[in-house]
Length: 353
Image (tube, rainbow, N blue to C red):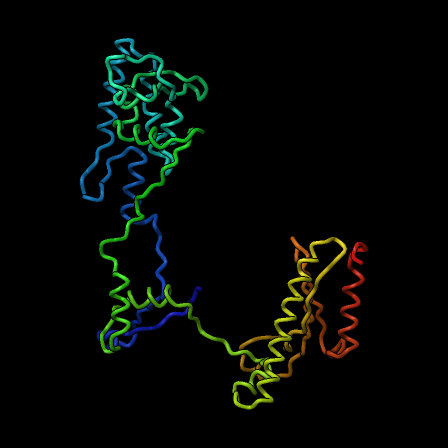
């Protein structure tokens, strides 16, 4: 439910000037890209210095430099032949990913069954699987590296690796749900407290923010637009519910309404067949053209426009047709309605029987 209407509220200081007005909207439209937290996360994904929630300055590029030293040292020892120039690419690819970091790790970890075990090691302490770590060279060749080299290159510890391997399924997909942001906020107003306030006297003031949130989410309320073409039987029943004749007439009318709804649903199901078509049609209320708010045109003579709408229940198109004519072409009598329906029937496909 969306309302674009605004309420003008004037403070005491604004009453003196009489010019400024503060607009209060029901829901505030926020742009998350302009949040400080979003900007810091963007810096984190680019491997730049950023601030965490606790206002601690995190220097990712220092980790990258330390990891680069380890990579260079391992390369000098001929432990791995990976080029040092391509070192920054894996970590940048990892930090650019928002939600699939565990899948990024699992694609670079090969889990195999244990081939050899020591008899001296107890069964409960034996490894359940063996792992191979590596990176893809030119996105095709898998080049194996050691675990320290793998963690240093991605600037991670053993925690993300163990979590990814622990919750992987048979197809190599990470199955654990991210629980961050799913806990109830500590400063949220409990539901019991809101119910107590609702039961108390209305003299107790309530914050505008809490009132708007409860009114907009807990209740299915909206501004009612009165119907112009109301049923005379229903209106008579609302005025006098004690009259037996009116009550019987109202009951029969409700039964006919429910029967027509059931018949309509059956016809809609039959319209799935190519040789069957279910339609509904109605004549719109009188339209006057031109439609304008100009005061000179308000008292001028307008041209009456008639619209017969025909809606076809034929999935998946569900086409709608509008037969429009003015009072110059004819009135809204039987002849005009029959002519519009005949024109619509002429354009139907021959498959319909």
